[in-house]
Image (cartoon, rainbow over all chains, first blue to last red; front, side, top):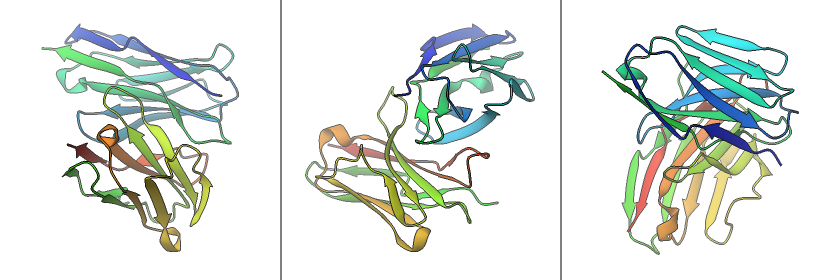
Length: 111
Length: 113
């Protein structure tokens, strides 16, 4: 059974800092991995989708990497801004069962 | 393209009452999911539909929860009777195929008092 863990659970950084959010999964046989952003009380917004054959994906100030062999993915946010404050969720897609989510990392960027 | 639509956005009910949520997926997306997200937790799958057939409902509390997807498009999720522990955000998502990931709606925040 796939399990996804995200560390840290919460993170507070000053504006402008570069930061890394970590995600680990127990079963390396995943089809893809998806990072989402969730603002308080809102739904999930997809940030990046990494296929199992890919090593990384980039969108603006965001870069997500995937290492299937070690069961890890990281989300790198460059030059953080207060508007980046949200919960970031990592989800692994085993392919034969639906997305399995971690509990998320709650990010606060302080101006 | 239009996103996944969900309604209502918020709902407050008393325990033992019933409630229903509605979801309209992205046009052409055959697969539809309902997830439950309790505060501070990651979303947990309740049920998965492929067209109008159920693929996975192993985590759906069938004594009180039910869901249907008529004509393979819109879906409704019902809770009857509601319990305090059902307070959560109910998220609907749809997907086209394995290559494109999931698209989520804005969710319905349910509070049971």
